[in-house]
Image (cartoon, rainbow, N blue to C red; front, side, top):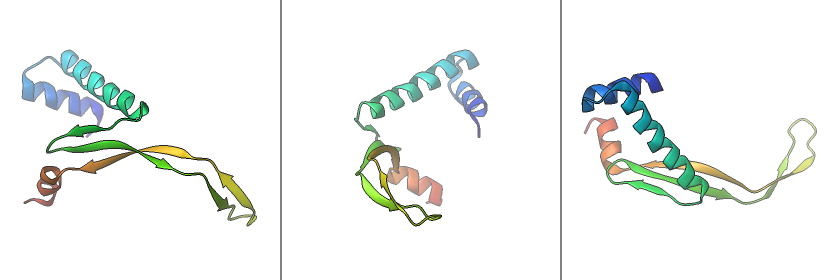
Amino acid sequence: MNKDQLVRAVANTTGETISKSETIIDATLNTVVDTLAAGESVKLIGFGQFSVKERAARLGRNPKTNAEIHIPPSRKPVFTPGKDFKDAVAGK
């Protein structure tokens, strides 16, 4: 499912217009991104949790030259599905 299909599915489910559904989905996704960028998490009970994982700086190795390289610290978004989400996907 792509974004257009998601927007249409939400519009059909809620009875809202496609335009309004797209605005709501965009606002929701932008809020999740902005919250994660601020270092906070987003918890949706029954669905899951979006959070940020901090990765420390470390030494790596270039596989071509075998030379050591410094890998800077980084932050990456992580999604952890909730129990209801896992059960639905598993068919329980």
